[in-house]
Amino acid sequence: MLLDEAVVISPSQIQEADMSAIKALEHRLHDNCGLVRLIFTDGQEFIFPESLAKMFCDMVQAVASGQTISIVPSDKELTTQTASELLKVSRPFLIKLLNQGEIPFTKVGSHRRIRFQDIMEYKKDRDTQRNALLDELTQMNLEAGCYDL
Image 1 (spheres, one colour):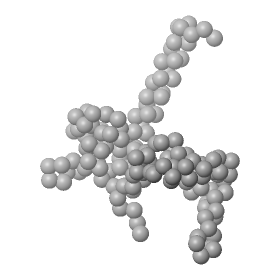
Image 2: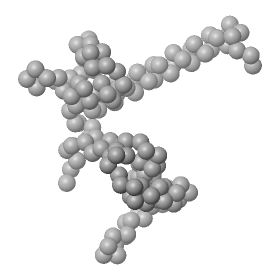
Image 3: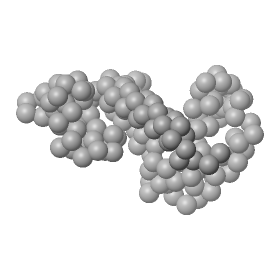
Image 4: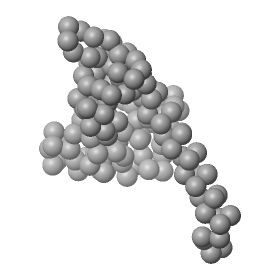
């Protein structure tokens, strides 16, 4: 079965007994994340590839610490509201970015839809540019003697 919808796991969905089990699993995985083995009820076992084990460990750690987890297919189309929440910007600001051609989108009737992958690419580019500017500003402050070394 292919994932065609977003899967969201939020702390409010997890029962207290399950959260205790998740935290115990997180504790077990903390030092053993390189090798994760799944044993099915029929006795068959599956050893996770290292990359999948790392993703699994990260997911368990996030859920155990109370974070909401979303698993979204990269070609999934999002509403402007969902996309603005992912970028942590207002919906009107996102629409301005769309109209300026900063992020590609399609229209379904009068509604805009943005591919999840396009939102993530924009976010990555924005974060890279922001970090470069912060590094440049830090360097300028160092050169101006604003920091004691």
